[in-house]
Figure 1 (cartoon, rainbow, N blue to C red):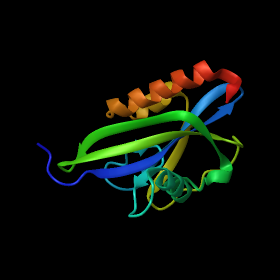
Figure 2 (tube, rainbow, N blue to C red):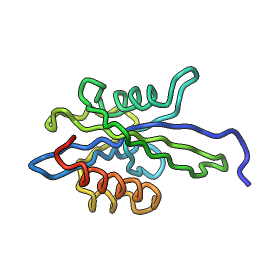
Figure 3 (cartoon, one colour):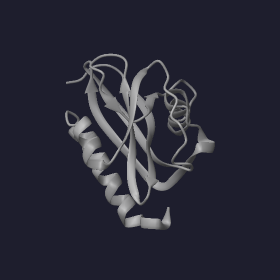
Length: 148
């Protein structure tokens, strides 16, 4: 049984389309085991989850709302324990308006990569639920095709 208040975080699965190839943005943390993750962070008091996703993506990757095209009707939520507390992470999907726009990392991260689905899944292989989100995202984008 998990004790404690639920921790809530939010972020974006950011992708770009380069010569008809979809690539996903992953950031490598500068803390812990230096795992790879989409930009995300904890919801601040008085902030909506969507506002958090925008703020954290701007802080962690230097990408603000003007750089991103938010994809309607796509939202994924993960639930998992962290340090004995339940955690809920909400992700929206965002396309880079300019696929060549540089990513600017905060001190919370030491590296970033744009990766195809298979490569992204290798980097996040210890997080099966995150892999599922990436797989579902890729399927969603393939069914949308050029309608994004």
